[in-house]
Amino acid sequence: MLLAVVACGLMSTAPGFAADRDIDVRVDVVGEEIRSHVSLFVRAPLQRVWDVITDFERAPAYTRDLHVSKVLSRSGDTLRLLQKAQVRFGPFTFPIEMLRDIRLVAPLRTEAQLVSGTMKKYDSTTELVAEAGGTRVIVRSQAIPGSVLAMLAGESFVKRETEEKFRELRAEILRRAHIAARQ
Image 1 (cartoon, rainbow, N blue to C red):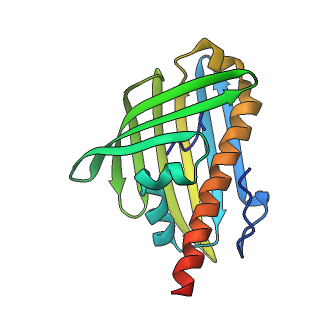
Image 2: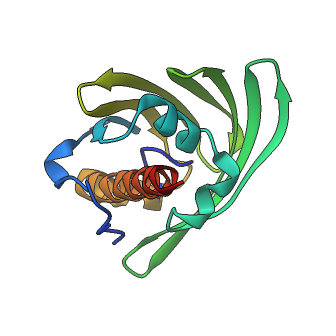
């Protein structure tokens, strides 16, 4: 998934869908680097959250603008993931392609590093923390877009897009939790 920075409104009516106060997104642009920190609380058990965030190949089904998400290989706790997306900003469309190595520390953490693609840099860490009533997802990322035009979008655009991606993620987690509860 393009969990934080430049990527890529699903608002859910599923039971337990929390208000946006459960999503906190901070974005800082330092030189050409975009740094983000996201904290999301979701009312679902840690294992359910882990199952969704690591189900990379189904991510295009619930993530707007993500068209391809394919695991190309696995070796031990690391996988190689190819993702392709289109991000829109006004009349502009930015294609994003990333080939990343993702280390899985089940079921608590993922560490991703860019291998190649349209970004100059993309590193991220996702941590899951069990809390009363659910799970907190914490994502830290650093990215350098490969396009000068992408930098023109600014912090507020990146923050808005990142919030939307996490709303979509939360909606999918809650949808799957609801299905599991009915079985």
